Length: 320
Ligand code: AVI
Image (tube, rainbow, N blue to C red; front, side, top):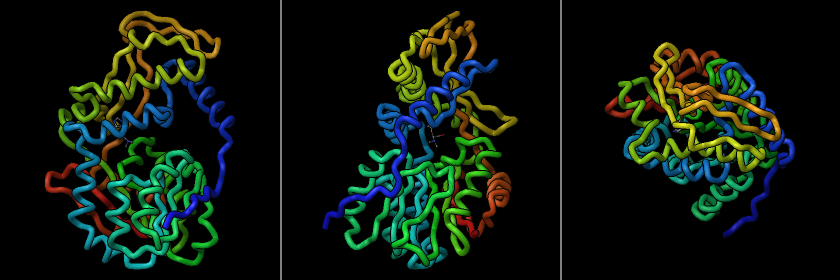
């Protein structure tokens, strides 16, 4: 059976467009230039990210899938049956079924800012689980979301794979965890993927792969600015950098100027000296104590932690 997808909330595209503009203009005006990583994900950026996830150096995706596959029985037992699965970010074809296959969910609610991405990612799930109520919600999950009335009264399981939490500064990550707690309510659980601190060489290789896909992903932000905000950034004069910041336990991605450059964005002029960077992403890594501290700060009590044999990644189940 095929069901028509009803998107519960519509975002104002114009509002989102001007948010991109103001984030870029204010980010480039700072003494240390920085643009939020969320703006990587236009159509091309999302494609490049999908390519990253299968690169030999990029271990997180395949490691998380292997943890979910190996421990799905224990996860299902700890979660119990009949919960509504609320996924923050539209489901990835490989991860969501690992959960839905085992836990006899009462419904599935993916929340994503992109309606197109929601439609694309829900289609195979509708085909695979014709009896499962699927209610996509088009919204920014950084604000409390309303779970569709049709699924009210059931305990919920939040699903936040991919170590996406790592792309946020700790304070913002705690805010998001609290917002998730509010969206999911009492009696809920959260299954979250978190990337672990490990050898620097493994980390930098994962974020600066030999084929240059991550470089293209980073540079696409400059191209996107040129395309959408009438920019003149000379992308050829920028290079991708991925550096480990040990003090903050995070990989940072930057776009570094190879020479002195100047350019305009939406009519505003900016200059970069040779060696100056635009900071485009943080990807925080955690040990068990760091993960626990973050979750407790966000209102979640960790119950189980599953890891791979090489200790690269962890999946944590926490109680509200
Ligand atoms: C989406 N996020 C968890 C990825 C990460 O690993 O931080 C984004 C990414 N950036 C470069 N490669 C992948």
